[in-house]
Image (cartoon, helix red, strand yellow):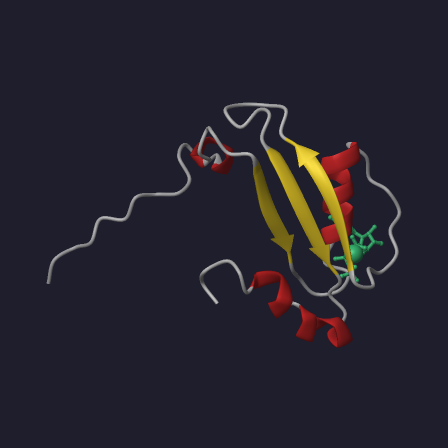
Amino acid sequence: MGATMVKPLVKNGNILDALPSQVATLHVVMLGLDSAGKTTALYRLKFDQYLNTVPTIGFNCEKVQCTLGKAKGVHFLVWDVGGQEKLRPLWRSYTRKNGRS
Ligand SMILES: Nc1nc2c(ncn2[C@@H]2O[C@H](COP(=O)(O)OP(=O)(O)OP(=O)(O)O)[C@@H](O)[C@H]2O)c(=O)[nH]1
Ligand SMILES: [Mg+2]
């Protein structure tokens, strides 16, 4: 049985360094249970502050520009999807075009 070589996605522990240099906008979907902290993390990324949040009904979408490292200038379109149980059936509609589902 031969071993398979898998090229690591993350180099030097930094996922940003693994991004292609010529990329316009990367879409990121945040999924997780309610009150996991998704919106808090998104606002921290976008506004560099910890802001009070309310439970997300539907989704929030924010454009975030990377300002450091090799990924400087790359734009992320971050989709922060509500995690309440009644909203979870909608999660698949945010992931079906990723080629893995
Ligand atoms: N202690 C602690 N509290 C956190 C952290 N991140 C978020 N919170 C708190 O957890 C609560 C829920 O955070 P949200 O960011 O609204 O959670 P969410 O994942 O967006 O929840 P839904 O929108 O319902 O899916 C808020 O009161 C936050 O202040 C954390 O890292 N530590
Ligand atoms: Mg939220």
